[in-house]
Image (cartoon, rainbow, N blue to C red; front, side, top):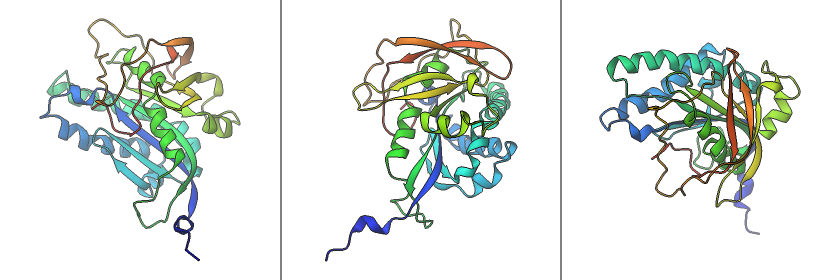
Length: 265
């Protein structure tokens, strides 16, 4: 009998956090190596301030994409990943923004974040097969979906530095059941649709510090070479209330997609 090659991979339920930098390639090439190196450092600081030091140190199948980062972690950390992590990440990025602007006001680090969970292969030995599967693919697609892109594109780049998209599964299992400190009413329902792909799922958008864009902002978000031009958004809008009490409306449907967690190459 031929051994089943798939049976050798133990599956574990893991939380998945992915981040991607808006308009990374809009920064000069000479600056990109520094910005790339700072992404995991910024995340580590935000994890630490959120009481998630252990989650960062014990991260499973971490992936450094150059203009982004993704990790798996124990699901017991999901409540803190939903809150306070996004708000703390906004604060850490505000500090980073002041450092960057002291060098060059055109340098930016604004992050899209996706939070998801599901069963993934995890050998605990760092195998190449670890972390591969539909939950990871869906986390990538959420990260690159139109609602979270538009949340940054349509906001003031000096104010809104983080936009988070949370999967329906995490919302139903953790947010809606009040296992997190983030009240369900503070998230806006959106449709994370990927044009040209078999992916269109309900998700939830949260912007810690929403704002409106302004003429001369950095709304340009160059598509990747294999991406389609964004479609004209359709559907409704959702009001998102951040910690500071501001309100912003965001489109919920349409847009382009690239499957990998990388940024805007």
